Every structure is written in structure tokens, then in C-alpha cells.
Length: 198
Image (tube, rainbow, N blue to C red; front, side, top):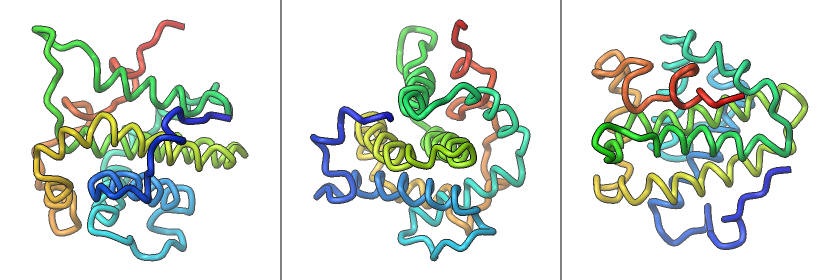
């Protein structure tokens, strides 16, 4: 089973830092939402504006760009309870720490933040559908810890989660955004985030 090295040292949903607490809440809520059937499931309303925006944007991605999701099951085909978390973090690390021209780290776009949660949701759904639901709590914690470590410092500089809600909230559909699957900031199967030597 995957265990996060951060589990013992971070407070997650109980963090006094509202930015961090929201990051973990988004991970927990979105994974629960996706594995319980999404918009067609029986989930209660989203607990915060951020979780509502995440659910909405994830649903819209699935509806408008289904091809974006068709290859993930192939990428995840060899996942086990012991490898789900490390594989997810490896894909995320390749995406966020991939070299860019000039050796700089690319700027963080809100679409990249969305990609972290949507990819985690796809991994969770894959595990859930293959009888590995026992790994879901660890995936939630690992994603929350990843966002805390990698993304929260940058979004703190952007004024917090309000930009995410403005970008992806239900009143602002993805069709109004200058964003396409496969552009900088999104995880696309078959791109650098998945091209590992076998």
C-alpha cells in the first residue's frame, strides 16, 4: 500500500493554513466525487467554492475532451496498491519539473493545477474500478501533500485559490478560456509526462 512520507508531518485537512486546508479538501472531495459517479452520482453539494469549481471543470473536461482521458487506463494498467501513489507523484514530478528551454521552471498556470486533481481523480477511478479502493485514502493524502509542497507556495503569491474559482467556476465555462488539452500546463497522455523508458 502506498504511504506518504508526509502523512506524519502535515496536518492536511486540519492545517491552520487555509490555503493548505483547501488543497487537501479539494483532493479528498474530488476523489470522492469521481469515484462515486461524478455528476451522475449521489454526492452532496460541493463544500466550498473551490471544490465546486474543481468538480465543474473536471466534468466539463470529461464532456468536452473525452479523448484526453481515453489513454490514461493504458498508462495505469500495471498499477498496484503499492505503486499507485509513487506512479502518480512520478507523473506529476515529470510534468512540474520537466526541463524547459533556458533551464528555468515554467510558470504555474491554473490549468496545471486543474490537471493535478483531474489526473489524481483518474488514478483513483482506475484503482476503484479494479478493486483497489483501499488505496484511495493514501491517494487523497499524497495529492494534498503534493499540492501543499509544489503548488501552494506559487498560488500563495497569486493571492490564493480565488483565481482558480474565477477561472473554473460554473459561471465561467472552459469554452471561454484560452486553453486546450495538450497546451502548457495540462497533462496529456503520450506527452513528456508519460514518456518513461520501459
